[in-house]
Length: 86
Ligand SMILES: [Zn+2]
Image (tube, rainbow, N blue to C red; front, side, top):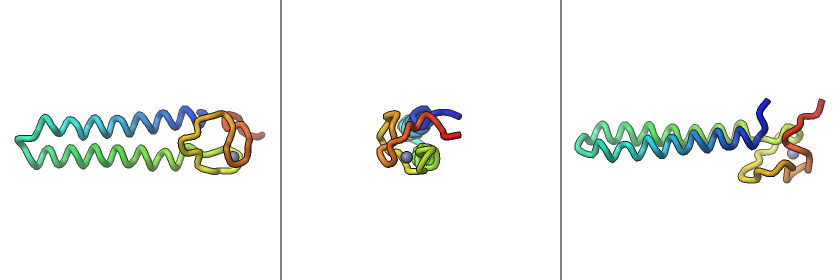
């Protein structure tokens, strides 16, 4: 099981990939249909990164979405987010 911080960075990577894909559309400005398709693909990739962030980056103790707080302690219940209770 990966820590929430590792998952958060994974999601940030997916979002960055979406931005890069969207920027690639600039190379196809002479082809409107293709450039729009690439922008949609990039936006979809970016949005799935955000959705995955909400789905994955959660406290293993109380289930709260950790948002941009990448510390080892949950801001909601105060437990260590890198350790799951057994
Ligand atoms: Zn918590």
